[in-house]
Length: 564
Image (cartoon, rainbow, N blue to C red; front, side, top):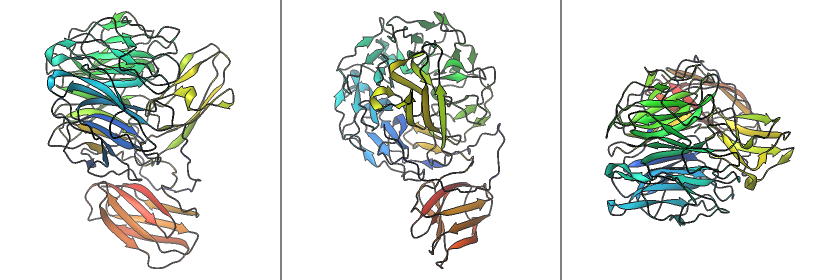
């Protein structure tokens, strides 16, 4: 496991305006929009090049064009270029993707579903994996499956052996072509062309993910479907996922696009949320299926949103930091919406937040891209009874696993697996009664929202979180002691800045917009150590998020500023 070596703490005391728990810390319009060259569909957020900063991975194509897999590299301050830094050599009708370290070499790999083949809808697609070769994805995937229609894929430990297996959807609903759900089993980092597990019947799945919904300590497999019911395939107490569905949805309108899994409400009840898409039928609603007392044979949604149309991307996250999951969702040519979660489960039917955009929201992900609220948490587990191979961490969005110990022995990568930004860990050896498990990990209350759009006239979006909290470490450090204090934040016109340096040095203060363009600069002129005070006149800047960067001759640090 690659542990991110955090720089020795240097305190930055930040004067802030706090926000109440019920406010949603996002502006109405995105702070960053990429160029609009791709039919962007698949989305992943992961540190591809190993510099400690999360990058954005996009699979372009959908069913409209054969395009590339691309990566936007984080520029080391949470900002990104307008155009991708890397693209694959091959092109395909790419659907959704999954990220994870499949061969335990410490580098994040990428799996991508190819919805349809080279000739279009008359030609089946496949699933493929781009392995990470020391910080850059291979230009052509070294694994490709046999040909079948598949729109989405997900990594998870399907057999409880501590490595990431690959599940895929099957079928092409526009043509009424149904197929089996599939799992390709990881064999020391490699995969066979054909799946080792298939469901015992065909259906029209469009999305898939892993989660322990019956809480028996092993990951189950969930499919959302178009024109057929949604299904959960349960893992037995040996960790084997059964090929017969353990749960079937009984709702009348089975026109579902995307799904996410989490623990909702104050009681942390296992639940699946799904977006309805009314292109082929139905009303187009978000549905929640919760499982407070295990997983029954069948059921209907226990919460639904008002109808809104062509539902697509969906994500569960604690947006307002009240320790209850909220619902983020979007649709085709629709805004992004955030509905706050209730203590008893379920969400607002009248969302508290609606973006000012109308785009084709295909996928939604969150991470602290600028690392301005990264915190470290340690959780311990000491079960009185065996708990299988799975543990769930307290935070829904986990930024990074730093270390895992079982009975005081630190585990290497081959002994467990996880997926970036998810909160489950699967162990090679089951956790038995009396085992002492200690997990140190990074999380943030200041996660930013990333959206992939396949609208040809619009790019992909970032909505930066406007909440500024806590005491943070510097982005970069030359090793000398220093601090910076600034406020008010948010600022309307004048930002007061106080900084201290321990060595004689000239100081430069820079402001960049989220596209990386320099919009303000100020130079000290003198090489004098000690405490200094200055004011930055930001009255000419438009409303939005900016990056404040202070530079000395040996030191640099960056922070997020909101201009109102």
